[in-house]
Length: 384
Ligand SMILES: Nc1nc2c(c(=O)[nH]1)N[C@H]1C(S)=C(S)[C@@H](COP(=O)(O)O)O[C@H]1N2
Ligand SMILES: [Mo]
Image: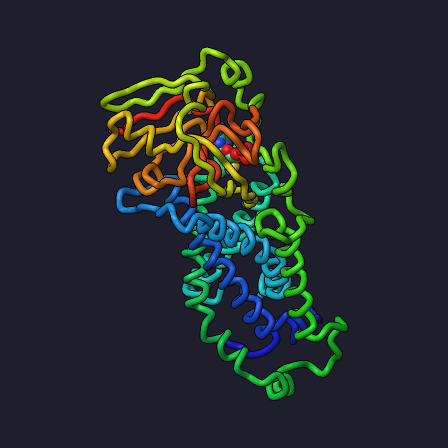
């Protein structure tokens, strides 16, 4: 392996000083950290939404999902400038000659192609998702999940093949190495390698801070597509009552909540209001990267389930008045169904819940993705 600038640089074709293994290695470490955190937190989010049999997600700490999903989105955002810089740094290798030196080299290039394609795809679709922009015809969640596995697999292979080179490139003192291999010609770009890395790091940091306002309390949302403080009743709306097609059913005075179990019963809205009310402070933490804390009041889900004779270890399906839609129902597992903070909320931030937030009542539970906080609840029933 040639140390220092790529052979193409020495040949005078790619004259920037920055197409260099040290730069590529430093960016690679940053990307590896971001991708590792992004992948791990993505797996958590996926497991909560489609839990395998062995998986249980606790209901405490109440903000844990908010933190893991915030990290997921922010490490993805941070990776965008790093990936662009890395691709630019190494692109002369596309023109390496001969393009394939051996079977091993061919495999290595194939994995790099998968890695680059997967990484670009993940960051683009993730960003589009955060921006509520779905230009693609496929189902985002499943595609983003499976592409993550492919991308991480290619990344592990890539790290395996490059670790020794990267370690050597980073260990060499810039001076000793430069005199050995760098052509005497002045670098065409005025930027030093350190300056380039600092610039990329700052770009990445700015992107993170600008996006963080959508989820980190106290940071003003600059780029965020959702300001958590702007929305009806101080909380953003994801899926309005009109969008869900529930404007009529949700306002129907004959509304009855159905609680199905060994002793099933129904409750009208006045009857729900007459039950013991509890007040909790819990966030909505959307998978799409925003979160907002709010004060909710309503009836404890645990009290309703006990009254219906639902066993403590049962899983409970919560269904919406909404007829269609992917997110019209969710499942409560015991950590959440038994938690005293889990409510069927009737009020939000001191007011009656408005239609867009789930009137007449909506689920709010601690440490749970927003997508599982079912609005316009029609029924709760034991899952068999
Ligand atoms: N019935 C129903 N409930 C739903 C949804 C939905 O589409 N249908 N969207 C969920 C999503 S993705 C989020 S983030 C939260 C948002 O709640 P909010 O609009 O009150 O902030 O509601 C959840 N509850
Ligand atoms: Mo969401």
